[in-house]
Image (cartoon, rainbow, N blue to C red; front, side, top):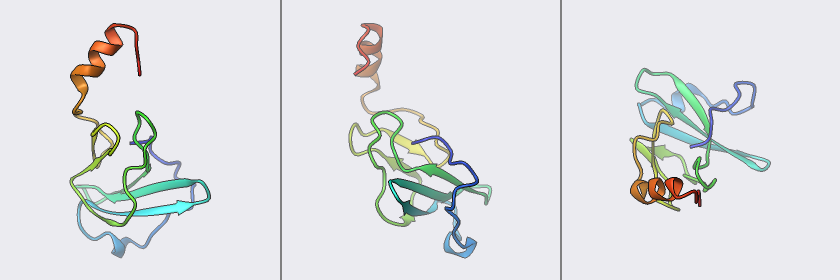
Amino acid sequence: MGPPVDENLACRRRVVELPESGDYVVHDFMHESVIVVRQDDGSLKAYYNTCGHRGQRLVWNTGSTQNFHCPYHGWVWARTAYLPAFRTQRIFRKAIRAGNSS
């Protein structure tokens, strides 16, 4: 998941559109896409709608989720943008140790 979005960006939605924890909306503007997601503590956070690894778009539509899944390598991002683990973690660790980051 991309880094948190600068609070000055125009990605505001009405709070009533995201009533439950895990509810999210996708806001596209120009060449950027942002996910605004309701957190467990009731706060709203906005993130760039991309996987932090290869920049793959994570979601296309508004919805509700526990996690965001990258369709490229299957990485799973928590709603807090935390990456607890990923499907190909063993392969990537071996590649990094070998000096190959792709």
